[in-house]
Structures are given as C-alpha cells and as structure tokens.
Amino acid sequence: MSAIEIKNLTRDYGGGKGIFDVSFQVNKGEVFGFLGPNGAGKTTTIRHLMGFIKNKSGVCTINGMDCWKESAKIQNTLGYIPGEINFFDDMTGTEFLAFIAKYRGLTDLERQKELLERFELDPKGKIRKMSKGMKQKIGIVTAFMHNPDILILDEPTSGLDPLMQNRFIELVAEEKKKGKTILLSSHIFEEVEKTCDRIGIIRAGKLMTVDLVETLRERHMHTYTVTLDTPEEAAAFAKDFDGTATGVKATVASKQSLENIFMNYYGGNSDDQ
Image 1 (cartoon, rainbow, N blue to C red):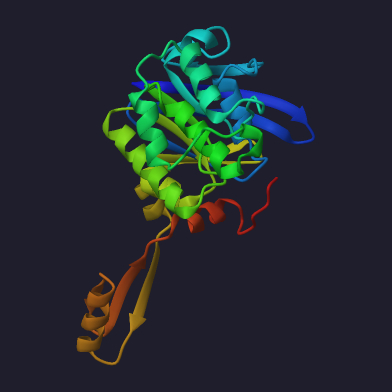
Image 2 (image 1 turned 60 degrees about the vertical axis):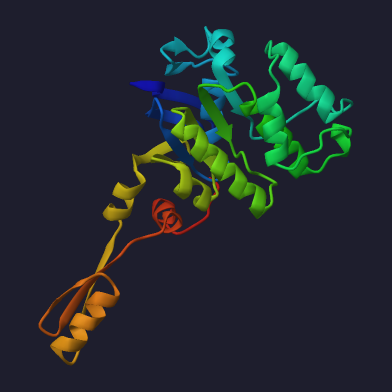
C-alpha cells in the first residue's frame, strides 16, 4: 500500500518552468529517491505534498489524505527537512528545539538528545551565528526527534561534511528497518544509492523514469565481447570480470553507476533546466 501518492500533478509557472503530469507513489516502509538538479521540479513537488501549494491539476495524498485540505492532520505524523531551512535567527538552537517540542506536544526528549549526540551538535549558540552545516543538523534533529512515520527530506545533507553525511545515511537505514516511509530528494548519488529502494528521475518538470535502483542498473548495463589469443586467456579474463568465456572470446557486463544512469537521462549534461 502506498503512503505517498501523486497522480498527474501539474503546476505550470510559464516559460517551461514547473512540473508537468508527475505521477508516482512511495510505498509504506520504502525509501524513495527523488533525483534531479536544481530547477528540475523536486522542491515544487514536495511543496505540494507539504500543503504549501494548492494543487491546481492532479492529486497528491499522504496516507489517503488530501495534502492541501488535510495538511494540518498529515503533519502530526510527518518529519520534514526543507531545501532552504529558515529559523527564528534570534533564538538559540536550544530555544528553537524546545519551541518545536512544545509545538508538537513532545515531552520525551530522549530521541532529541540521541540525535544531538549522533551529529555532534551543541545547540546552545544563536542560530544566526551558526554555520550552514550546524543549521542543517538542527533541521535533521527537528525532522526526526518526534519519531514520525513518514519523512519528506529535501536535500537533507546540504552543508554537511562527509562524516556527517555518512551518519545521516546510517540514520536513514535505521529508520527504514523500523518500517518508516521516506521520500529523499537529493543530488548526492552515493546517498541515494546507499539508502533507496526505488528512484524517480525528474527533468525539466517531467518524470523521466521510476524504477528499482537495480533494475535501472540492469537496463543501462553495457556488455562487451573481447577476443583474446587463447581459450585460457579468455577464461581468465572472464573470471576476473565475472563474465563468461566461449573459445577465445570473453563476454563481460559493465554495470553503470547511479550517476552515469542519471546523466544518460540528462544527455550527458548537468543542465539545471
């Protein structure tokens, strides 16, 4: 059963900007990767799911509830990291987290404490003086600390160093084991490759493909046949590359990285449009 469902969602800003007839679902307990460069339509799609934008054409629901009409009810069990995080800059991080906990009616702060330790974050200072990475960590803690069933994460590791990115990947893997549903928008291929079951690739507001990561790899697999001097050399070559040998010919398959697959859909260009 799908926890998140989008059907024929269109938002036309003119000049080719927006999203056009986007349809996909995220199943319960699944981590779904939403890939595309800046300007491709990821954040516009997510804003519809969050109830920040009213759908003019198409449908988007979370747990069967309309994302616009029932956004307040949906957000009770939702964790969200926006692509551009805005805080009350005059607050300290501690004050902001206390404000969010009170807003959510959260009395058990053990999870919050564990997340602060995991990401090595001391939230006592003023938010306006914090680095991009520190603000991102506060966003992560805010999204996960109330143990939500569904998480919508828009570029969640932006500004984090590689160590903290790895800790975030570990966190997502743990949440997945607990049966959480996660929509992960990202352009960091390693992050998506390590965490996601399926991915959707969006280009210029249009969904190009939705499939299992492994299925995409198989679809874009390259096969090579090499002729060598002797059957023994062919057999040795095939063995080294997990291929097969027939006589003096060795046939091997080359799996594509997720980044290469992505670039196939973008014609080899990192064009933001």
